[in-house]
Length: 447
Image (tube, rainbow, N blue to C red):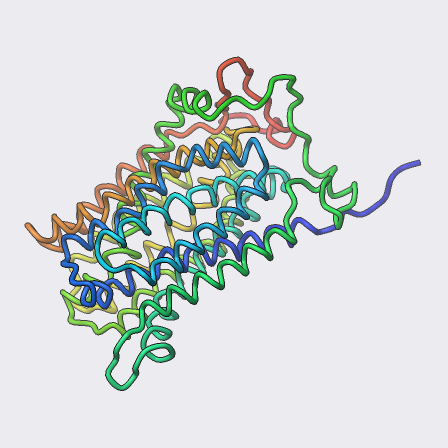
C-alpha cells in the first residue's frame, strides 16, 4: 500500500523560533554601539578605548565559532543553542553593572564567546530539517530574524534609554536599564527555543514520518564524530575554506561599520544627535532585512539556474563588487540621508548574498556543517573585530573618505574570492571520505 500521508510543516515552526533567537542575539549585539556615547561619557572612556571595546566582542565571537559549532555537530544544535541564548542574555544583563573600560571589555569578550555558536548551530539545525532545494529560503528566515533585531535595535534602544527608562526632559539615557531589560527578554527566548525546537524531524513529537522522509538521512558512518581540532586541520587544508573565510573577512570589514562606527560618523561629520542617530542607523539595517527576504529566493533560483558550482559563487562575487561601488559613491555625498541611502543599498546587497553563503557551507560541510560555517564566521568576525579599530585609526590620521575607500577595497577582494568558491568540493576530516552530493544536487553538471 502506498503511503499518501502529507508531510507536516513543523520545520517552519522550528525555523521561526530559531529566527526569534537570532533577533535577540542581534539586539544584544547592536545596542551597545547606539549607547556607546552615553556609556563613554558616564564611565570616562575616550574614543580610542571605546574602539577596542567595540571590537572586543567580535574577537571572541570569531575564535569560538569552530569549537562551539563542533559541539553543535556532536551534541546537537538544540542544547547548544539553548545554552548559548541563555548565556549571552546573562552577559547582556551583566553589562548594566560595568564600572569602567575593563569591565566592559570583560563582558563584551564574554558576550562574543557566548554568541559564537548561534549561527553554526542554526545552520546545522536547518540542514537537518530542510531539503537542499529549500535551504536558501529557510536559512534566510533565520538570518532575517537577526537582521530584524539589528534593524530595530538602534531605534528601540535609543527610545528605551531616553524616552522610557531615562529622562526625556534632559535627554538623559538610562543605558544600564536597557541592558538589564534586554538580558531578561533573552532568557525568555531561550526557554521558548528549548520548548519548540528538536534536532531532527524524526525526534519531534509534532512532526510525522512524511516530514522526516523529506530530508535525506546523514551518510552512515561507523566512526564517531572527530574532535574539533581534527576538523580544524581538515578545514585549514582546504583552499575552498580559505577562500570562504577570506570572503567573509573582507565583507565584515565593510558591513560591520553599520553597527559599530556609523553613530560616530554621523555625529562627527554631520553633528547628528542620539535620537536621530538611532533612526538613521536603523535605516540600512531595515534594508538588510529586505535583502534577506529576497536573498533566500534569489539563492534558490540561482542554484536551480546555474547549478551547485556557479549558483553559489557567481551571486556572492557579483554582489560584493556592487557593494564596493556604494562606498565609493558615499565619499562624494554631503547630505547625511544621502549617505544613509547608499549605505542602505550596500546593506541590502550584502544580505542578498548571505543565504548563498550559508547554503555554500551547508553544501560543502556535510555532517560537519557547524564547523564549516564556523570557519567562515571565524574569519568574518576577525574582520569585524579589526574593523572599528582600523577604520577609527584611518579616520583619525587621514579622513572618513579614506575609511570608506578602505571598505570599498575590501569588498572588491571579497568579490574576487567569492567567484572562486566551488561548492562541489566537500570538506571531510581526516579518515573520512567526502560525503556524496544529495540526489537533488546530482542532477546538475558544472557548466
